[in-house]
Length: 133
Length: 222
Image (cartoon, rainbow over all chains, first blue to last red; front, side):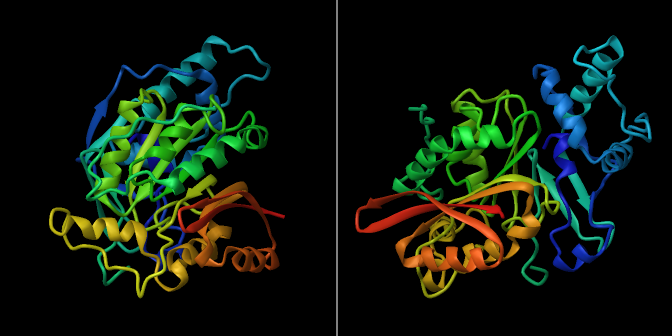
């Protein structure tokens, strides 16, 4: 799963919906990552993503996975239609992190109930065992 | 007419594209400009529940619905075979450069609330005594996975009902849902009860398919 997908996944346990700890999930530091350089950067797409992304959740997940370099505040692009070199640098960084980086194998858990979910072959499994479903 | 994706997978485990799938493609094609206008210049989170072979999500990716510069496609299925087929459909139809994540999930339980902009659902709508249990393993009883894609319990509505009951927490403020029904689901009654709960519900397309009548309704907030 691409890293950006972590911005949309919460714990499947219904009771955890009443907690603020069910999103984002906590990613295991041993998750195996893959970088796919063949995906081209589409700046307009990235600008749209940046606007929508839950930055705090992203910072947390990146940090879980060992990337502590994200700024605490969401980077802002310069106003106006023209992209500056700084803007392009931000967009390229985001592209590399959110789109080119995938979690191939590993696990993640709910910060509220602790339930562990697995990622295998790049596919996250958020199904619950029958007694929790 | 927009192109239809090329699909090839094991139809003993994954639902083979049929009249209902094609009706969904036609309905979404018809809705193309509505969706484009609604999500212009913003990111659209597209979520298909139960993609099966992947034909619908691939069709959306292939034709840039809702729009080209900003759709993230999430395909959620309980069946691992369907997820595999959906990824395969993406590859076969040269949509590798689109953002697709397949996720094994029971409906939308794992999705952050109010994040879905476009929800598409061809549910297990066939009336049956009950909704089958999830098979305990991937390999055994392959046909059981297929049953899950078809059988919808009483009135064929047990699973669809779960989604409708959660629609308010699934969809974003701007969100739109397209859900397919057969006549035995009593869709007009369902639509009316959703209208009473504050939804704007419109029949966008219907068609006689063999001995059943299929229809697709669009749900948005009033």
